Image (tube, rainbow, N blue to C red):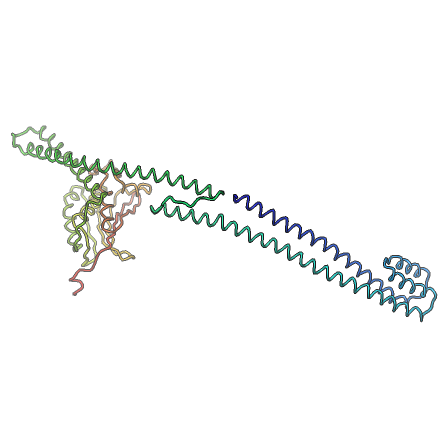
Amino acid sequence: MTLRAQLNMITALVLGGSGFAAYSAYETRQELESYDQVMNDSMETRSVLLMIEDLPYHDDTFRRLQLEKDRLKEPDRKAAFGKAVTLYAAKNPMELRRAIRKGLKVEAEHYNKNRGQRAAIQARFEKLALVAIGILTMGLLLVMATVHATIFKGLQRLSRRMLDFLVDRYSFQFSQPDESELGDLQRTFNSLAQRVINTTDELKRLDSAKSEFLSIASHELRTPMTSIKGSLSLLASGVIGQLDVGSLRLIKIAEGETDRLIRLINDLLDLAKIESGGLPLHLNWVQWDEFCGKTLDGLSGLAHKADVRLELVSLPAVEVNIDRDRLQQVLTNLVSNAVKFSPKGGAVRVTLSRAKTGELVVSVTDSGPGIKTEDREMIFEKFRQGTSAANPLVKGTGLGLAIAKALVAEHGGSIGVESTVGVGSTFWFSLPKWRENEVARVA
């Protein structure tokens, strides 16, 4: 049964039951009002009987008393009241008193009888009211239980499946969905999830094939490119004879482009090894200042050519547990990018600080053009890079930051960027494994 049908059935039962109880309570209330009227009439008759003895005889008064007698419907009340009226007209005080007492007794019995009947009806009215409230309450509880059982629990199951799907633990094994609206939703999500899984598997297969192709192509290209590089170097050195200026310039251009292709091939091989898990790290404890200083020294030529200062701000006596060559590759990429995008006369600052979480954070700050918000995640993807036509030093493969991100992840850290357009950018990465070196602890 669908949820709509269940709710419609519950609503019909609740409305029918509460409507019947409400109608019965209304009818009972009408009876109570009629008994109230009878009792009020009895009280008025008693008041008249109490006043008869003190009323001076008058024809108009007698006629009114006759009208009061005619209004009474019960024979015993009418007889008792009529006798009192007759004695009033006969002007017999003694007999009138006895008749008044008799009439008052009859009215009291009539009043008490109706009061008892009214009390019974009042009790029935209260029971009907309680029944109506009970039906409405039970109906509300039944609706809440139905909604909880059919909607909330169904949504919780669906939410758990979605969370499993997000963390790649989705088994695609739903229990048989109910024949309800939520069952339809589960079946729809089931079909959608299966399509996504199939698409994801296909993408993974294509990505694996692509990585395998790049790896094979890179291996096959590196050997001939190395040979071409060697041949161009020999030509430039004059082994086969001196070349004229024009020929030498062309060979130098070809040699530079060959270097760039070799770097691209090496980057592709590194990326393929990282993605396949075939690039193991060789971790050692390294003194940070010494490691960072050597890395910056290696980039001093690039910085001098770009007219950019390199600055180092570090924590004293800190050792980090890293693969020296791989982390040097990360730091070199970030600093060289910062140099390329910094204006002449600017500075690139490398800072080591301690995060609130206890990790060390390496920051590389430049005063370049900055990065737009929508581009900050994109630049860490493969073959994606920012461009700056104004700076001829800005050349690359678009793989440097992707490789840096993968290598930092292999070290257990994370990488990111903070940037303000027109002010500059700060690329940072974290290093979770560090310590104060032995000299600092002894001191």
